[in-house]
Amino acid sequence: MPSGTLLLEPPRPPDPARFQEVVNAPLSACLFSPYIVSLLRSKGIGVELLDAHLLGLSVQDTLKELERKFVGAYDNTPLLGVHLVYLWEKTEEVFDLLSKIKSLNPRVHINLYGYYPTFAFREILSRYPFIDSVTLGEPEYPFLELAQAIGDSKGAPELPNIKGLAFRNVEFHTPHSEFHTPPDDLPFPDRSLLPLYQEKGLTTYILGSRGCYGRCTFCYVSPFYGGWRGRSPQNIFEELKDLYENGVRYFYFADANFFGPGRAGRERAKELADIILREGLNIRFGMECRANDLEEDSLSRLVEAGLREVFLGIESACDPTLKRFRKDTSQEVNRRAVGLLRHFGIEPNLGFIMFEPHTSLKDIRTNFEFLKDTRLLRSPAITAHLLSHKQTLFMGTADYHRFSKDGPSGHLYEAHYDFEDPGVKSFYEAASRLCNEVLSLLTSGDSQACCTPLHEDDRLLELNKSLVNTYEEILCQYENGVGHRRQP
Ligand code: SF4
Image (cartoon, rainbow, N blue to C red; front, top):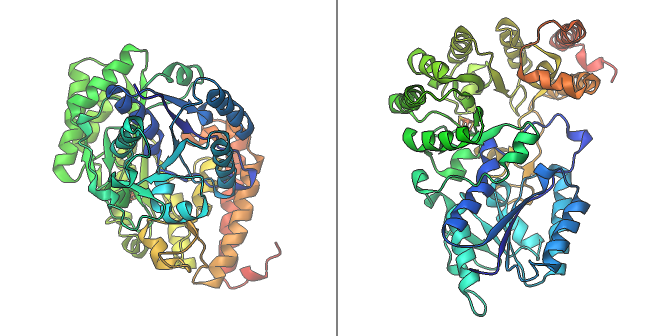
């Protein structure tokens, strides 16, 4: 067995100024490291995972923990794999940490994997000399080959020949979308941290499929995976059963899109529900999907099998915006999906982009009326996020390349942009001030209410009502051409 590989989920230092930014990596990324662990172990490679994020370690404590490992049993660790998540301004703290690790053990090969390094590998490799390589796209098999090459090598390994990895000063990088892991071939992800998840009351995630068949211009899931690939229902069921036998009763599918394309995609979902019911697995679960994939037949079967929570990526209620996003849906499709979920007793959580570069005041009005009309503004935390959420432009998305001032080879992972309409810019500033103010009034318990319907809490109901009314008032002022004279 090679002397050892260490995987690190770095700490995610909290940033109070960023509490409104809800997502900086798709949920499916949460299983990258556990899948690498199980694949490496299945090939006889010794590997350990330090999940500093899960353990709630600070950057300093993580460094101490790593010092202990490098000075002790891991002083010969030749390979450190790091799942790097973009943390806005805090990302630099993680790079500082990695730089210190390299000074502790200059022989260690540091590899990064995940969405951020996949799309920003050129910038990362040129800016941070202590990073040796980056895994492009799905990390499992390229990382396995890297671990094998490092473990087998007597001297300097022939690393640049490994497909799916990017190295400094190597011009050619095999496109990551060429690497399609047959999902049923992978061992189930490592669950040694399950007791800690259970102790902390955290959700157990499971990955039933990879990627998405959608082509939304603001999203990098499809460029990362190169399409949608599902595990077979039987294979998913086997993993569910294993976890069930370990006491798990609630699961959340971390899939970017639970459904595969078209009728076959819905039939596959139904087949999974059929197996769960036939085998008598008494579970509850949640999932994320597109609005156009919801139809009565498969949904009713999934609900019977335990589906209770759905995150619906509707993004907008404006048809021209949905067209610009290449979402291939419409306000009508979104409205129907919300209605259908409610018919089955599920109150959806929404993916929604209120502000994007082309947004007009008319679009804001259309979105606002839709959200009110469909009773989706149901608690202050939800309302504040929905009413102020602004599109981010990350490398790897089609919109980044369209709107980035730096162009496709720019030096920023996140591109900044101005709204086309200066009135929208001013309204956005006023709306985010209002929404941030409301969010700052909420306790952590209040914020958790964002995932469940608000019932009898008078204080929150009143705060929600006042937020909606104030937003309405400000919007009217802008529509009447007097908004820009508002005082900050
Ligand atoms: S539906 Fe669009 S936003 Fe959602 S995962 Fe697919 S491509 Fe991304």
